[in-house]
Length: 118
Image (cartoon, rainbow, N blue to C red):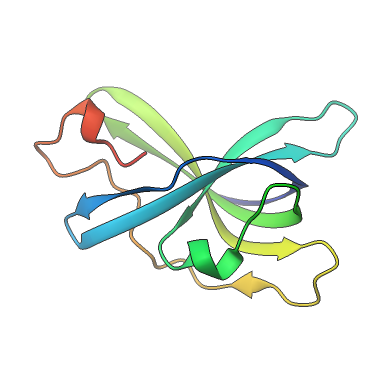
């Protein structure tokens, strides 16, 4: 499922990294506050090389294309909103790339809940 979201970046969370089945991975999560009558805060993630490509900073006005995906792990469902395209307001260019970075995984089969990459 793909959708677009417009808003202001209000927070960057610490970058995360680890080792998955396909090798090392890294993820940056950030919070966007929508510009609606009743603003909503949404946590989005960027994976791999897109972290540097997008160059997200607190205060940026952004238009983000997001894919939603849910996965089951140990009887619980986890949903992730992964940014695959991001435009900053006033920018004539968009940083876009087909989805193809490290796939959303629930870790290797013997990982504990504390080892989850999300």
